[in-house]
Image (cartoon, rainbow, N blue to C red; front, side, top):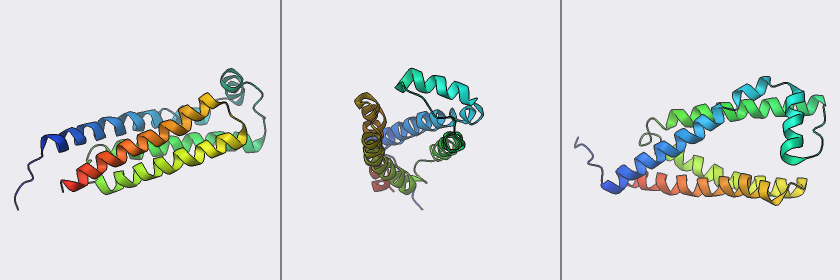
Amino acid sequence: MPERTPSPSSSLAEKRTRVILRLIGIGGILAAPMMLMPLEWMQQLHRLVLSGELPATATINYLTRSLAMFYALSGLVTLYISFDVLRYAPLIKLWGICAIVKGFVITAIDLHAGYPLWWMIIEGLFSLLIGVWIYRLACRLTSQL
């Protein structure tokens, strides 16, 4: 079977995809210690970033810790697929689509919850833009296969 000769643009797409996924993966993994963070610290961070009180209920305690676990596990999977972007290009495409959907959904949730505009832009718009970027890069990767 002939070996694939990567074009300069596909090689650049591979490198960019690897770097972006690794940064996001490492960022997600950094959420792992939050699973063990004392609730008082979470409340202080909440007051610092969003003002107001974070209720000290069992549900909030559960949701904050399980969300940190979800981010850490998602980060681990994202980091893993970054080591073979050609093999996982179809999955990376799906990852991009999910990030785009997440951007829209999380913005709607933030609007409904009354979060400040700056938070919605950082959280929703960033997810949407990264999703579009990853999706487009993955399309270039799959067109080379």
